[in-house]
Image (cartoon, rainbow, N blue to C red; front, side, top):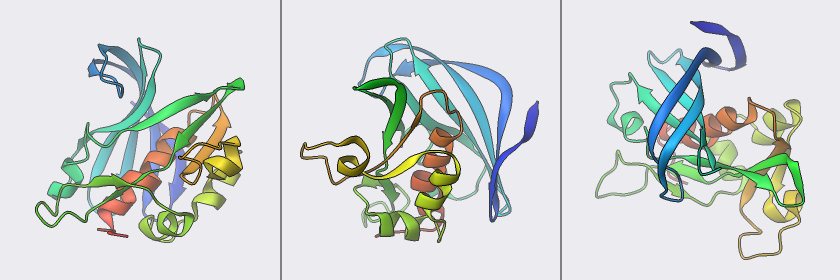
Length: 192
């Protein structure tokens, strides 16, 4: 059973299911284990729907992924259970979470319907999301958006990667980040 919509933007509606899914497989770090997850339904006016899951692995890892899509487009099916987004706990504050916002793109000429992840600037995230401003979307949800240096104070070689930080109990930012960085760029055939 689906609940009321949690988020709506243009031709998209994200709703959370009452279901909790059990999942077995490999976590993002490749650990074979089980996970429990919250499930979401992404409905579109394009004639297709996608099921998303926010998984909490026994290994302690968290991620968001698409689990199923009824689109006739191969590019949409090719992201299911493949293009995942890690949800990390902030080192200095265990009540705060963050996600790197790598972007799915269709730029491989050998397999044009197989999306890959690429580093993306704020402008590229905006373009890939079809003009939805990630900074505005995340700000409305009480999250911080910018580079890892700006948001997390990161000084590593990954400091220029876009990210979002939010309260750890926020169950809306992770699936919306997935939609903005994975689903929409692939649907829009964004190549950067």
